[in-house]
Length: 416
Image (cartoon, rainbow, N blue to C red; front, side, top):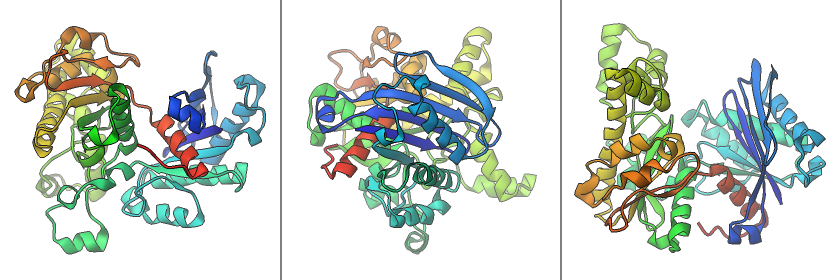
């Protein structure tokens, strides 16, 4: 089955075509046929398409809407230019899987998209006003272009964290506010954390119930997840993706009374404070330079920039804080910490700084192994005799979305 995986953002559409079936999943032999991204939708879009084993196709042209972007993607997929041998017409696309950011408490697993599901995603727009509307645009575009006969599946970022106990997901607010408005911790990056739990289980040939790890998705957006017996029991992001770690442009954990203080001192509106916390803080705000960890590491090495170092150190310290917290929450029953995401997979120096000091909980770090892991590689970065292991696994959310889509369409059980 050829699965189109779509990730529709506010001004972008990413896609992959993945060939899979239940037999391929069991043998871990799914095949990615093509991928691409269309950025800056609504203006002069930057377009990158790539078929496996072929040169990248890059161009720029005006793209007005998500529907136009999806139409362009579909036309390229079935064109001779794509060189996808198994797809010659739209009928060769058998199902579509969509990344949907927020499922609230309504959706705790991936589901086939129906009018009722669309209404449920719409009901959760107030919880993800930037993301869910864009996800819906992708769903609507596919329905219009491929027809209702092509099954579509929604895979929710929040679903993996639906197993958290109330002690993890509730805030210390009056309980009636949770009952009235569902104000609680939802967590994000759930598809990535679930994939990492699967990869760890696959690597060690473990059962799902024996997966006890702390997963770290570290990128421009970043989160940590405590995975106990294969399930999420706590995670650093909260009601929105703003809570938790210091991120590229997000402030992470802070005293909310700071906002009242700034209101009186600066006269900020709610919109200005939201912009400050989500787009002007984090690594960018601390360094005053950039939100990109690669650039900060270069500034530190080449120019000994003090604030670049400060931003990096704050990022690493916050990750260590969550590792320690979750280690205690899991009563020390943690076999490994696992790095993933753009920073987690590629920034060896950041991984080293995070691991420094974790000897107290049993980690013996191997610097030589660590320095060899980057650019899509996976591997162990602790010593063989380390009581607590450290691993690096590249995430693959699109593969998980494709597999979930197949299982939902085939009405097959999900095993992880």
